[in-house]
Structure formats: structure tokens, C-alpha cells
Image (cartoon, rainbow, N blue to C red; front, side, top):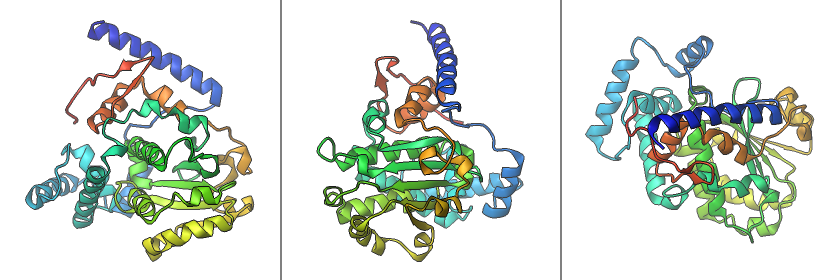
Length: 324
């Protein structure tokens, strides 16, 4: 199949996939990769210090700082890529540089979470309903990442699979300029967790979770909501507590089974029915069943070291190796 034929197939599949998933979920499992709306640009200028009049100089200063320090070797240095780190640290050069170093250190120290990992092969995380991203945003425009840890059977696969799934979700999420500016929200539904789960949360695992969710990824976790926690959670949280600073602890909210408490933070109009809302859910794998036909997204994943392959698309071959 030549390049033109391949693109025709992709276009046909994109149309088919969009129609199917919109019909099934009454919403779209797509990423918003376009420019943020004007009101969000104004928010970013006010809250993050993203000034269109000075951003070119800030980007060049950031690029110079990375080269001068030599503490990491980014796989990309284009404006769009550097901007996500600057937004995550409110355009503070030193903090953005520290974040980038931590991001690449995390990737180098944990290559098993991404190198050669096939995102299209992580369907089991969705089939077991362990994690997903809701295909709609809450009232402030933030995505909601949902974990149901009680559905995880550690005898089927280890905690490293959860890290793989979380990392690829974050890598996809940060492609959205809106997410770079606003960050995201996490809901941890801890119904049915047992000591079998707790035994797998070692201090090393806890440290990696905090690195991935707080200190080492270029997207802010705006809030974490804990639902249906039991005494087992107290055992687990005792491991995490020393790793969280006061600012992060202030972003964690405990609701138990009180959905009205959750609704004080997230309007129920933007929640699934099980949490007192009115929306449907879409499983984790549906995102990949849709996004695998988006060459821009797939190129990004391949550039990060992922190996994308399934029966529909075969082994994905990138359409570009440079990014503007």
C-alpha cells in the first residue's frame, strides 16, 4: 500500500471510528489538539504568566538553559514541546528546567513503563474497569482520570501494568493545550480494595506514584478525590503521607461514600451515574480504539519510545520524525 492509499484508509477509519464512538457513548473520545480558546489564553496569561509578547524570548531562554546545564537530553526541543513544561511551572524557568530533568530521569530509571510498550495492547486495563479517562470534562474544563483499584486482580498482572497505563494516559493528555494550562483531576474509587492490594504498595511504588502524578510529569494534578475508602486505605496512605508536601495534601479530598461531598467539587452534570451524575462511561481501551487512527497522536507515541501495533493497524510506522 502506498502513502496515498494509506492516508485514504486512515481518513475512512477516522470517520467510521468517530461515528461509532459518538453513537456508543453520546460523546467523543478524541483529543482536543487545537489552539486553546481565547478565554483560556487569557486565563493562562493571568494565572501562569504566559505572555504572547514575550513567549518567544522565554522559549529561547529556556532552550539555552537546557543546553547550558546539560542535565538532560530531551528528544525534542521545539517550541510546542517546551511550552508544556513552562506551563506546568507557571513559566518559571528554573522550576520548568527542574521538572524536565525529573521527567527524563523518571523515564531513564523506569524504561519498562514505556520503552517498547504497546499502548494498544493494554486493553485489559479497560476490560477489567481499572482505569479510564472520562470522555467529557468537568465544569472548569479539566479532564477526569478515574481509577477503580478494587477491580485490579494482582494475581493476573503486576503493578507495573498500572504504571504503563497511567503513563500513556498522561502522555496523551498532555498533548492537549487545555490540559497543559488547567491540569487534570483524579478520582480514586477504592471500593473493594483489600490487604492483597496493600501488600503491593511498597515505599518504592509509592515514590514512583508521587513522581509520576506530582513531581516529574509536565501536567498538574489539580485535585485528587478519594471515594469509598476503608481501613485498608489508611494502611496504604501511611506510606504516601511522608512523600506529600502540605500543598499536595491540600489537594486531596476524602469523601467516603458521600457523593454530595464529591459534588461540592465536581458538578454531578459531569459525573457518571454511579457517582450521582447522569453521564455514561467509556472504557480505557476505547480511547485507543479511536486514537490509533490519528497519525498525529501515534507519531507522538512512537517518538516517546512506544511500539504501537494491533490487528487493525498492524505495526504503526511514523509519518514524521520532527515536530514543529
